[in-house]
Length: 611
Image (cartoon, rainbow, N blue to C red; front, side):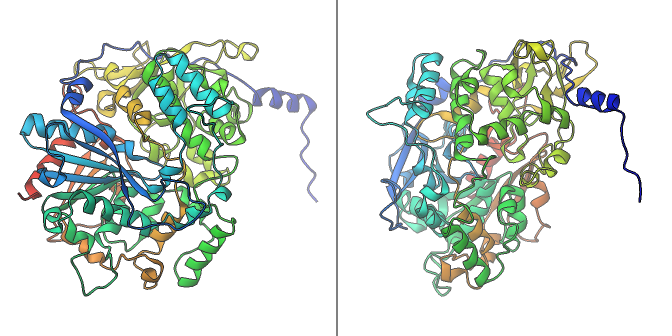
């Protein structure tokens, strides 16, 4: 038998010391450069564009006595020109857009406002954009967020958020009842594809009741998983009778639009889900929904609490973690360069502790021994960037190109894919995390481990502060280490933080229903209609004029199938853009970035809409 290897005591002690090593040094990014003045401002847009949060009665009613009030309504943000008719049928065109996984209606806050503004001021046309909230957004308690949004100072806003969601503060006579768990929401089992798709029908019929009119001027589309929603809608038969075709989704619209997604017959929904909802594969790994029995078994597991009814992974990912970006974004909108304190003020649940560690880790040693997020000093804007910027966030499906870090040493992360795959459940979530971009992390939490928390204040250099056409590279102070360049940064932080919190919706969706993903896996199966999955006309998708905007650094390019001769289809490649960029890339700073979405989309709409 082989003799076990025995290390000298000094070697063991040295290994222990090295395992906790901490190095705050590294290249230091150059100073922020002067920003640019946009061609038009938010005030200009607000003078032209009216934005309202609409609610209509659902046609698909969930009959459950435990269902909270208002959850049988369909809600969406309506963007229109202020001087246009209240009758949407009078508009030149209208776009119904569905958000991606873990994404609320505010995912289209920026592009929706800008499209309506540009159509009016540059083309003399009136269009509407309807950004749909999935029904499960009715379960979010945004009372504290909305009170904080109205607060006159950032400190008052922070106090309202912390007091309402983590203390005993009452707002309008109500106290926060806590973040809901899957077991608290038995009715969520009914929040599936039938309910969601028929909500899309409800919006179109409420806004443009005449199908002959909607067929000429209404377009349907979405971002990420919203492309699958769109594919489902186009192939849907509302009465499930193949002999009657007037109610097929494809026969109610003039065209389809996708933002970093694919719109196609749902012949391989599992592959699509792997790209746009990677969490699903972890949750459903042992349950293959390829038969009636398997499908029923998944629903039984969800009903009995063995599988969650919403995306909720204990000690990793929860509604509380998904809600946090709205709070951080709200504070960043009010005071982007002020040092962030909200993270240290809120109690850290196991989910938050785990998520902070996964988000903010340099390598295996750092993951195990720190220093962790709470030891570093960040501004409010920099905190937002840690969650969403494509060079810092580990979640590829929530990445945007916001700029770069500034203020202290910033170093490369080791490959997160290798780290993630060694941790149960995390591998699928961050399997595409690094993408084509190098991931970075702040290095300096203080001069040594005895003085953590005393490092420099890390600020954020916005996308228009990293360079200009004469000097496009953003480097360290010596000019020898390049972090990014102008071609890879195109989202203004102020536009993004607005979408995280503004109004009665938000960007991050607290309670995404798992039933939607299960139903997608059942799409196209012979048993589908028996369970309300009425996507029985897959070929109808190919008859609808379609345009896809695919980020060069996003998730959609690998999902585009072979070109189909005769299909009215256009693919617009967006070099350097990450998954959220197509909806947020600046349209009014052309000296830094030429936006390839807005004008191409308006060209597509007006060439396919009919009077």
